[in-house]
Length: 459
Image (cartoon, rainbow, N blue to C red; front, side):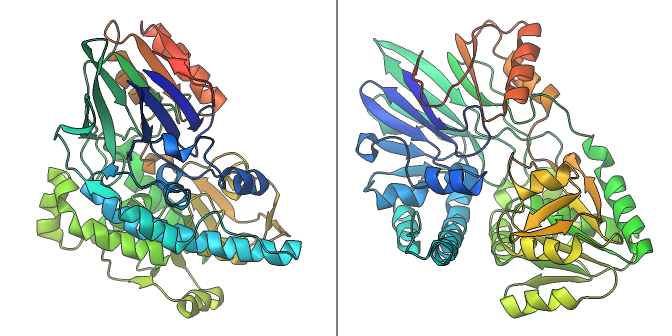
């Protein structure tokens, strides 16, 4: 088998990994690149490989850095199958269309700036075309995708519908097993099941996002969140939460519900200002089969987990604009998670310079994004091209992260000690990749490689 990565190699976005097995080509993920605007615009207009080579596509989950260039496949002529879990398929039906609209608006902005027409990387029609190619397959069902190539999805415990991909294939008369981790979730999170624990494989490709650091304990999450809300409320300020529309927003909303029921926070209005988040939350309600047992039991006693006493889900632009004039304490949850697009950028523009407010970061912020600059607590950031002084409090809660931390990643990789011939690290920045490699080697794991973009690795 040959493996070539065209994204998420020495980086955390644009996941695309091409497997060549017996002369056939299987693409794992096809994600959008996120980073510097000019680099993103360039990289998201091509895939780096010929679409005609692709015989099948397998999607690990719906996060846009793993799925966001799927419509480009259709635009470039791909007409094969796309395999995913049912929840991932339903989420992509919403998220890819939303991404297409964002690409269209961004292209219109660039056209005005450059005073010449700039076409978007893909359109809503391309998103609809690729959705026609999806085949939904539940967890733990072994199914064929190519001659002598079988796939099984296992719950990755990362987001709704997320999967680790087990690939069984025949090579030189022998059957082998390859595992693609996708994004590995954390144990004991409040909504989805804990991640699958594989024990055996010939080759493993695993993510490394938090390979250099651990998160705070899940058990401390509610207390820290309550402290931040209460402190900001006492100042008369707002808590602005940039959040990924998928999973992170739902985790935050559910944590707020728990705090509300305990009386641990004051009666404070909560605004979910993201049509995408609203739509995704509806998909969550359809896929209770993906919830863990404890969460399902809590639903039976506490009712709708995403409905608070003082919550308002906002869809239209006029209602969103009304929040600009909002006075007094409030919590505003809005997309996108890395603060690069969407309504959150407007809320940051309006609130980032007020010391009464808190900017609460609850997810990973990639290099060269506005979110990363805020996490770095730069004194001044540019929003819509205008310098804004950062005077609001900046708080970071990695407890909400849906990614496994360093210790959990080492535990995952160490399972393959003396069992896997190669362990390939992807989806991490250099610091995380190098730290995880050292940690795994200290645990006795051998045959570790850090994947390089565009370089074919034969295993």
